[in-house]
Image (tube, rainbow, N blue to C red; front, side):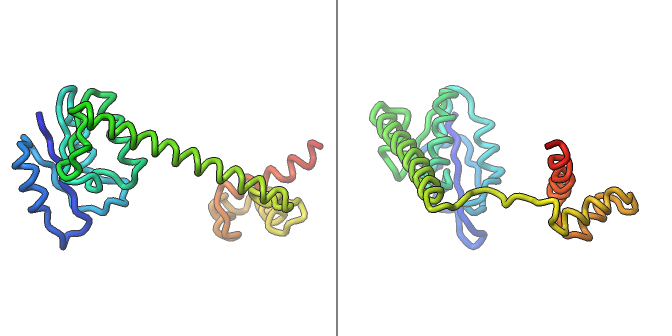
Length: 191
């Protein structure tokens, strides 16, 4: 089967041109969606991906209709390839995993995406190293037993007059923070 996926970002935009091109290409069924490409929740995309089987082809009008970013595109198309599902972008003629040339182009994109991820990782590590060299320490500030909020949370917890939710609301803290406050005293005592 050849399944098409058409997407526009807003309800004011129309899918007509995409549907016309996907129909002309020969799609057996077209899944239409009106949602921003930046959204991770795209129900129709998930639906079409779940319906594809080995040997099927997913067709889109242009690559940007399918993925939110290069990494997102690579992940989707890699998943399709792993499941032996072909992919074709009508306007991006070189992206056609049904041909050897298209598969080569896709693999070049995948290598570039991997290269980009590695560069980001290296830059992040270099930035952290430079910050440490300047005396900057990352992470959360250490909690002290002398902190008034920590003392108050511990006292309110020992009094058992208020529930944990009430204590959190009173101190304007989250439950995880509350439990970290409780541990501060325990760590000090165990030393």
